[in-house]
Each structure stands twice: as structure tokens, then as C-alpha cells.
Length: 101
Image 1 (tube, rainbow, N blue to C red):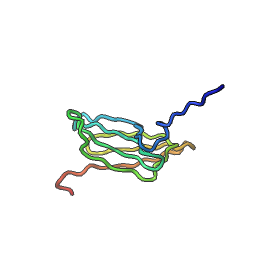
Image 2: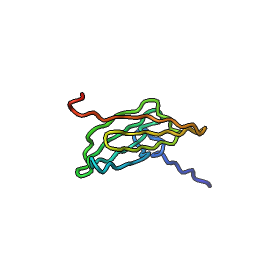
Image 3: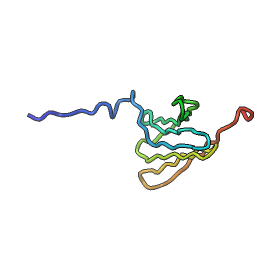
Image 4: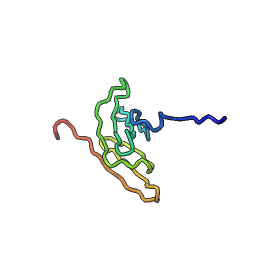
């Protein structure tokens, strides 16, 4: 008798999957890129000393089949996406200071 194993944690929408992490040394921030489900992603900025989430932004039109990477330099975040067909695209985010809001 064969027993089928199920990895329900891989497909459950209750789990968040980390795609990439970067560290910004001048601001002492950890940047986390994660997928929430097959259609949504999230970029989170975390204080490196306390681990507290300082800011997060949600990404719509997330492509689960693409490769995602994240880079941060000072106040700029670059999200690079490579589709299964090999096409690249990039989204650039700029952090605003309280005076710019």
C-alpha cells in the first residue's frame, strides 16, 4: 500500500513565503520581500535592532511563477522580477521623509 504525503503548508494561503532579504547598513534596516499568496506580495522594512516592522507596502499583481529579488540603498528600494520567459522588469520605490508627506 502506498501512502500519499501532503505538504499542505506549501499551498496554504495562511503562510507567507520569504522571497528575498536585504540589509541597508546606513539606516540599519532589514528589507523583506515575501509572497502572501499567488496574487499578492509584500515589502516589509524592519528595524534591525528591535525586529519591529516600521513600514510595509503590499504588491498587487504578484506573479508566483516569477523570480523576485529586492535591493535597498539609502532611501531607494528596487524590486526586480524575472518572468519564466526570461523577461526582466523592475519597480522602484522611494522612501519619503515626514517632511515630504
